[in-house]
Amino acid sequence: MRRGFGVFGKVRVTRRALQEGAGWYTVCMPMHTPLPDLISLQGQVAVVTGAGRGIGRGIAVRLAEAGAAVVVVDRDEVEAASVADEIRGTGAAAHAVQADVSDEAAVRSLVRATCDDLGGIDVLVNNAGIFPSCPVLQMETADFDRVLAVNLRGVFLCTRETALAMVDRGRGGAIVNVTSIDALHPSMVGLAHYDASKHGVWGFTKNVALELAPHGIRVNALAPGGVLTPGVAEMGAGSDEAVAAFAAGIPEGRMGDPDDIARAALFLASDMSSYMTGTQVVVDGGALLA
Image 1 (tube, rainbow, N blue to C red):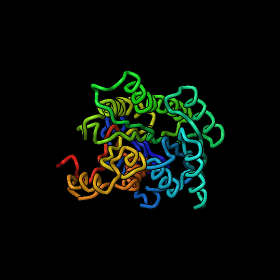
Image 2: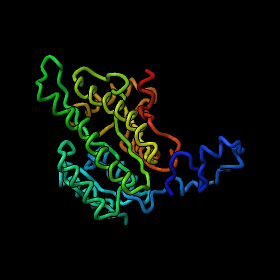
Image 3: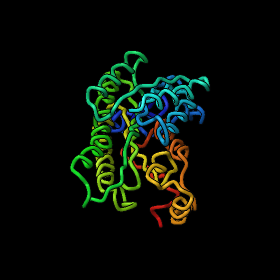
Image 4: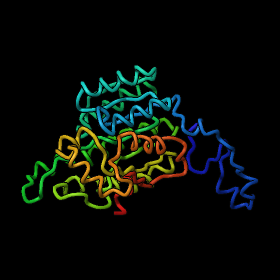
């Protein structure tokens, strides 16, 4: 059972009851929920964008393991289908959808089809993002616009359309926006457009959390540090030498694995974090401390 603000177990705390002087424990003695129930997403539908590989794939697999029917969304149809097949191979439910999150019509179609076919959306993970490296002095306007279109506009479109469906359904939900430690501190030169987009997602997360809280919809951010993914490898940062150099600056002494981020995403998607909204969880091995 998904619980919104003011709900402990099956007892709702009303403002009037508190104003009339009823004791806290008299009104809302919390019920103890078993740990497996808190982490379970059984019977829920989760949409994960950018789920064809890397962090998105890791999140999709973990949410499916927790019992969710996962909609694997990616602009690469083949990669999305491969992850959906992988999940179905474990006995869990998964559906692959090819979509560009920066395309308004595509996002509307994605949400509408998911609600029609699966009954609604309980969890949205806005993970899709791009990070082509380019110094500002060499950056074309089109380069900047493309990064913000995917990384920020995409989060807005997916959040708006999903939240409308969640509000209409009346069962609340959880939205997890994948940002980056670059939303808090730049990691390298050449990612000004990326950093701008991730700062934007963090600000967007906090404001939307305020707006959607009355509807029982939690909105949180998840900020990964350095993670070994295919995208990192394509930047040339995945060589043994580059990984060793980057890891040397991380207190834990290693780069992250996509599953490190996926575990935190499951926490934010589940009732383990039912009293959290508008928060950014940093998963970086201590990199921001260095």
